[in-house]
Length: 107
Length: 119
Image (tube, rainbow over all chains, first blue to last red; front, side, top):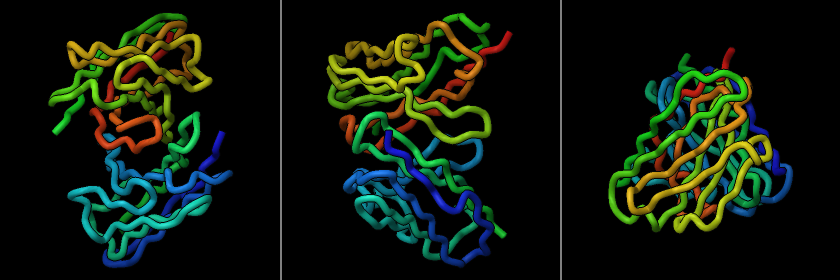
């Protein structure tokens, strides 16, 4: 099983600051790594697919990078609506797995 | 645009059974794969099961293999998750999610169905 380790687990950030979340895979997943945002009480929403492809309608402040075993989700300038949990997910091998999540709080 | 709606959640005793449904709106239901993902209270996301567009290929997480069965009826645009021999640790919100194939991202999610296994 491919284990995805996200860091940090929690981040308290002021508006307009930059947020960087890392997802490390226990073995290479190529670029089959995707990022989701889950606001409190809501279902997850796909932000970035295949490591770096932004989904339609997702604000441009969200970007993804990386390949192989290390990936990054960046929020260039944090806004109040970005308070949420963020999860990475690999679809390179079964079983499909998710990272443990990163909770972003607005300071 | 595809929308997904889960139903069938509820409270069941350990050892009991429950069937979840996921209804899809929009066209070409048969053309995409579907998945179940669950989230235990206060926890992260965990993939449960996958079914191909035709329904001919299915995969399961080890934790549910032999107890849960995924299926779909493309004539009705509905996917199912039959859950038998339920355990307390199966308590979670169950989401259905669409993907292009097993190796794709989950690009559309339902609102979730809450399953509580408790005596």
